[in-house]
Image (tube, rainbow, N blue to C red; front, side):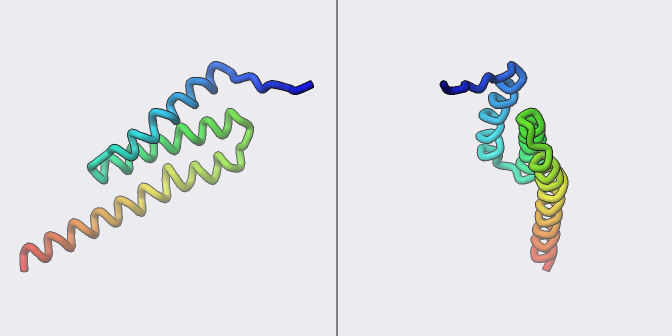
Length: 90
């Protein structure tokens, strides 16, 4: 006798958002937009992990995808743009 897992309608919605969010991150051309879309995508994954019963994974994912990664990426973009401007001035 096998047990089949049933999906709650909220899980269907979150799986759909995850399926749509990954291509949105990949297809973003602007680095700033990519950072924002990736943060939102990470937040959807956090909600999915909480709903699936993995709060420890959700907490670590929350810190990495919505705080640490966008901050590091935005700092790198700012430094890259400022060094490019300095080279143009010289």
